[in-house]
Image (cartoon, rainbow, N blue to C red; front, side, top):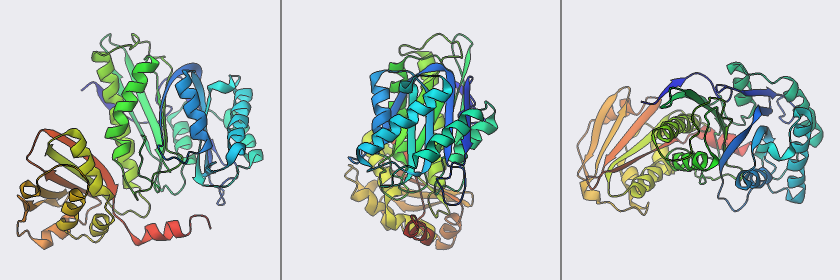
Length: 410
């Protein structure tokens, strides 16, 4: 393996600092703004929501990423999404970038912005601008500083979400990839409300950085579903400052593969953490599809199952209702033969086969319920039709999900 998992998030890589603060955007007074910064201009890659309704920060960041400009800072606010805010929303992005540039001594075009929270409300720019000043003064490179930033971008999240790996290159140099994300509800990314920020000190050209991210997203963030809703603000950004000093990655080869594997590992960890922290969730529900005809079929089938409200409700009820799983596979649009399917449930409590060649195995309901009562549950489907496979992550659907979203604005 070309990487090892390490502690940390956005400050794990050399040269990156971060901060979080309470600017007064959240009613409960919790931290609600974060900053990520590096003195070294970074190659930047990004993926963004495909929702036709795009928040102003998505438009702002996509413009910077596609222009080829190098970035040095990310300013994030929680509580208000700056979506459906008209021309004023874009003006807020510009004003935010200009203030951050002023206090950090960089170009406004090197400042990325992101927002998450309630749609349709205008940003209180006096609080945003004041928060930027506080953040700039409290920047730090410790892992705890990255943790503060990860906590500050949370909305209905119950826990922070961070991941980091150390990768090794052919020339003996090592680099770190670290990231944080937020996401608990309105999670059904297709761009890739989720936000993810990843930093690395690896030296890599923009084209290969974007290629690695574009390859990782369909396997990770796009394979998560909490509630089937694709946000207006979905954003994933990667910044690479090159301070690891490795030979610059400009083409395919062992170094690119090492970087790609490390980035995939970070994104996978963050995706799983989002699914586990789904609004009201009591269990992480993972679906793996094996021996599908094509990779695309495997992805479609796995995602269809974790997106099924009926299946998610059955997981909450610890009910091995395999008919709901097979039904979700059947309406997914992917090609498979139901009469060949084997289904299994697995958790810390054991493993059980519930379907063989499309027919009930006569399994023990008592054992199945015990297995489904754990906090992490895996369902595997063997299609026996090819060599392709994929996995998706979701969570159970509980009464608390309705409570959270019924009261979200009030």
